[in-house]
Image (cartoon, rainbow, N blue to C red; front, side, top):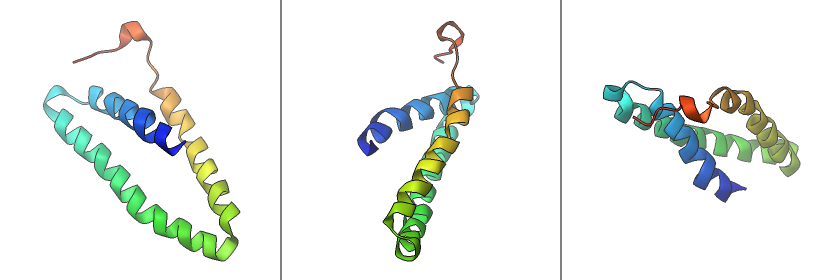
Length: 88
């Protein structure tokens, strides 16, 4: 699942984020998108480790699944009909 997320979902959502930015700001949009991933991994990973120590390993999987499901409405909102998609 992790490999699927990094190889398909992360770049796919990055493309959507960049395409929605003005042409002159697309580099910054990609940088911000990548920075948010880095911050999330840097902050959430240690917090999940603390949670595992306090509430057990199963709580980490439960919280991770919940957070992943919270992103479904955001990703669904980004879905665009193929004929409406802009490439540049």
